[in-house]
Length: 158
Image (cartoon, rainbow, N blue to C red):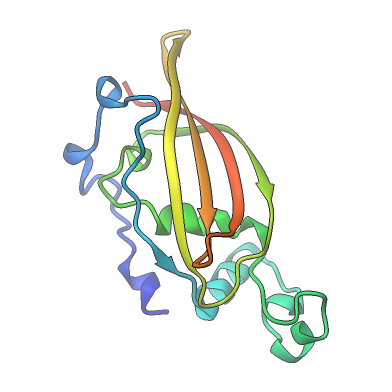
């Protein structure tokens, strides 16, 4: 669980370093950081969301499944989004609201996978005086295989 200690929990800490609405350029890749997904991180995530299926915890059981070993639940992309996003990234701005998301899952993430995120804003627009950003996120493992991909919409603070 050493990596969990590395997460910044003060969302205001780097607020002055983050891009504001006018600085977000659709199509421009966001800076991301690789993350090694540990068994401990998977277990901690599962416990926090109430997931108790043995495929995520019990190695002997997991070896008997079609996956042949431990995997992470599909919703692990929530942990990965924050793990692969630097604290000074615009997606982590205080006051940002998740306005919806859609995800496709290709293969499960596994313990010790080195996860890489490719992310960018696709579009930004103003509707009813709210600042919206449409963004695209694709998570890869160390073999270049797509774990999952998603499109989301956020409402940005003014």
